[in-house]
Length: 94
Image (cartoon, rainbow, N blue to C red; front, side, top):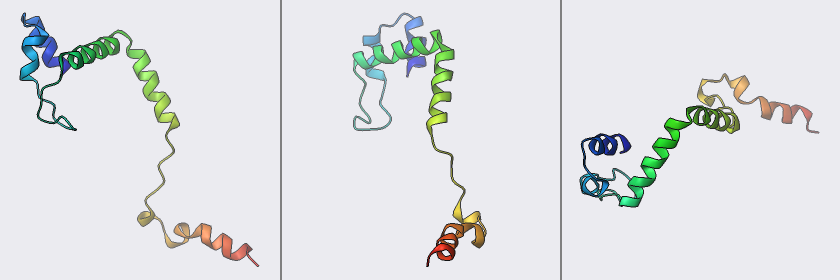
């Protein structure tokens, strides 16, 4: 949405003139036009991303570090690898 608004604003249109032509693609308000305030918020976020690209990259890296490592698909593991936890329990239990 921001690129469309920026392009049309560069051509001299106001946000109020652009707003009825925009359509929300998903979610609760799917098929409706976003509010003028939402358009201005999106433009502000876009400007912040363009002004501080290193902060965006750092935030993405921090988020990736917080996510747990993806466990392998059990279907791709051998039966021995797939049931290694259970085997340890059986061997060590009385």
